[in-house]
Amino acid sequence: MRVYSRQLYEHLPYLRRYARALTGATESGDDLVTDAVEVAVMAPTRFGLADGSRAALYALLNLLFDENGGRPAPSPHPIERALALLPEEERRIYLLATLEGLAPAELAKVMLVPATEASEKLTRARERVRDALTQRVLVVEDNPILAMEIGSVIADMGHVLCGTAANEREALELLQSARPTLALLDVRLADGDNGIDIARRLREQRSLRTIFVTAFDGDLEELGARHLGHVVRKPFTGAAIRDAISRVVFMPTPVACA
Image (cartoon, rainbow, N blue to C red):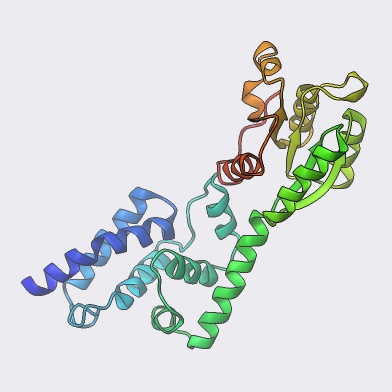
């Protein structure tokens, strides 16, 4: 029994990692692992402790989680929200492959499905998560060359450039017709329009996340608008645009504010 207890102890970091992702909460995940350990020590050979495999332990976590409802806690984090949209079996396969590094044959053992089916569901889950994280980006920039450069970076990242606008009227029209999920805006625009005012309107109407690409970031301070979005200073680099978009995509969705 001591040997099995030591082996189980060595599995704990992996079990906690998966259980926290499975439940969507640290405390719930740790409670789930505690329950699983209590079951596993009573039947060590049944749960793979004799051969060092974690597959049966992952399966046990799934079983116990199903007894408690089998769905993760709601999360504001984009990846976790994207995963929550998956069919539950696909979500678990994705977590086991991504977090725990399980190959299709191992996934099959945990999920009790053929290896080919596990592989197909993993591919489908990855595609759905990628689609959920793909942004439809609106660029508000009155310089067509800079707008084109920014659009090129957006496309290279795998996101969709859904439109470019040079002023507030065009931006609001595209908000309705193109349904963006993210906007990159200059501050000082043609026709006397202001990207800060546009950002406020975009948030009011659709809680749209915003990034300012500007040489006039001091305007944000003067107008108390720093909270409206990340800032990329002009002259910008492609790397700076990519970094700003990545930070916004992978951060919790902000609360809308005027």
